Structure formats: structure tokens, C-alpha cells
Image 1 (cartoon, rainbow, N blue to C red):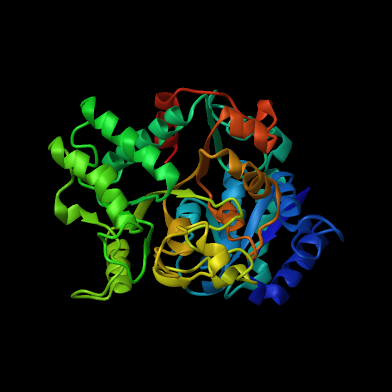
Image 2: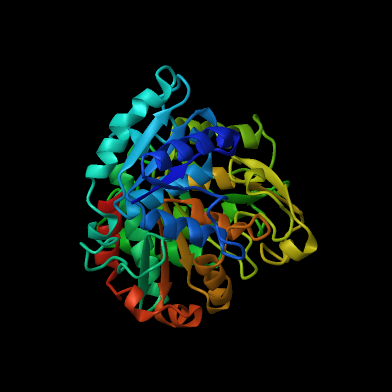
Length: 421
């Protein structure tokens, strides 16, 4: 019988003490980096350890509450139906981890220390072996089969790009109704054009009003560039989505539309984006990845530590000529205003859009490789409720085993994702 210990690195001495206590009670403890074999892939080792554990025990503190690594471990436990127990090391309540801990069992370890662990050990011993737990997502015929890796939560494969874009549009409209007091973050780039066209088509079919009361915002904008310039993402959204909806009388009110600004007007555009996302937290973001692994203007090879970027909110990112070619080769600026990786990771639902065959190689890397700040797109693996929407051709190019996914219609895929959110 083995339990997985989740903790922040600042509590290394505590996790060592807890592991020793449990092992004296004949309960094996697994924690990183102690139990990761030399040469093993860190993320795979952690996922495998959680999946085979009887329970996950979290050493809860302020640092753990803010840690994206701890959040991902809890998401894996939830995915694999592993029960979670948490030891409160400080007099603080869960904030960022509240989603996972609100209904789990906790023990106040601050005063009685090891005396409080006897009940925990007794409860763990009574648990059914993890092998008897239901397989990951097996209850849904349209979800991943249990043989699929831990991330993403769902692989949605469609026959055509048009179908994938329609599914994305349906998810936006469905979550707009489900989360009316939230922000929907719109993607930019080629895949965004397909999604916006699908949104307009659905609006023509009678989805009214398509965005309900939810707010919308773009995920990037060329900084220092007027919104009427051809390289402006705001102009792209206005021309491809907002204007057609206005013509149909279905556009959301101007009070709900918050397209990022590339210039200073009456207020700082970064602070403006921060205020919008703070007032209406993001419920959905669909994001595209460049062929090299850049995402949200974070350039490959620029960062060394995931902590440098996973907590970022709206900010201005400077890109080199190399990074610039994947954003827009004609743009007159090397500065990009981005909502930040932290904002994307905080959304209730994250969609990874892959409609371009050139992205098969990087998607294979993101699906199978370790998390590394050098390839920012791999940090998307930290999102606990992420879905990849792609086409059959790209799935084959990625090298996906066909037993990992089932082809589906846009309506079925959208309904399932919305129901899981």
C-alpha cells in the first residue's frame, strides 16, 4: 500500500518527517524527487505514482495553495479517482486549490502533530486498492479511454477543420450561458478565424444572443499598434466576428466586449486587462500553439524556470525576430500585450486548438514530453481541465493511438465538455 505525498519544496523537511512516520506504520510513501528513478521523465513518474497510489496526502500551506505543480498533482488524483487528504500546516484556507479541497478530508496538524495522524492511517488502510477504482473517463463513450496519458482530459478528433471549429464555437456559446458572470477569452491567429466563422454560422442558425451575459476579451494584441492597423488582433476580431454579429443584431453589448488595446488611451491597457479579468474571472480560453512551441507570445528558449511565467497575468512580452515570425511577420512592433500564461491556466476550461498540420510535431512534444520553461507550450499540461480539439489528419501526424480517442460530432463533443465543466 503506497500513498503519494504532494507538497511545496519549502516543506521538504516536513515531507521527510511524514514519510518516515507513515513507513513506521507500514504505509509506503512516494514523493519527488526522492522516489524518481535516475533518467526517468519527471512528469511521467509523478503521473504513474499518483495513478498507482492508494491516496494522495497534501501538505497544505500558503505556498502549496499557489503552486501550479501541486494543483496539477491534485488534478491527476481527481482524474484517476484517488482520494485526497490534506494536512493543514498553517492557519490558512484554500484559495486557488479550493476546487479540489472543498469536499475532501483534512486534518489540522499544527497543534497535535503526529497524534493526529493515527486516524489518517486507519482511514487509508480501509480504502479499496486503487486498481479497483473506475478507469479514467471510462463512463463517457466520447471521452478518452483509460489507456490515454494523464493530459489532456479529452482528445476531440473531427473529420474536418470546419467541424473542429464548430465544436469550439458551440463550447463558447454553451459556457457563456453556464457562466454568465465570467470572461470568455477569444483566441487569435488562423484557427481563430475558423472559430469566428463558425460562431457567425451558428448565430445564423438561431443561437441568440450567442454570448448571453458573458464578457469577451482577446488573448493577445500587438503593443504600440493602433487597433485599425492590419496586424492588430483587435481589428481581426472586429472584422471577423463582431461586425458580422452587429449586422445580424446579435453582437454582445459594448459593455461586454473588452478587446485588448495596443496603445495608451485614458488608462493603462495592462491595468485595464487586469481589471476585466479580476472582475469577471475567465471561464474559457481557446489557445493556439506555434509550430515551435510558443504560446501567448512566450518565446521558445527565453525562459529557464516554469515559475517565471505560470503565474503571469496581463503583461507586455518582447519577442525576437525568431519569435516574431510566428506571430505576424509584417507587424511593426516586437511587443505583444498578452493576458499571461497564469490567466490561461486559471480558466475553468482550456481548449488547445490544432487545425494546422504543421503543428503535429509540437503537439506530439506537448502530449508526450516533460514540462519545460524552454518550450512554453508544455506548461499547458498544468491545466487540470484541458481539451485538445483537432482533426483526423493531425491526430495521425501526432502519432496518436486510435484507441485513445473516438471521432465525434461537434454537438456531442461540445455537450460533453460543457457537462464536465
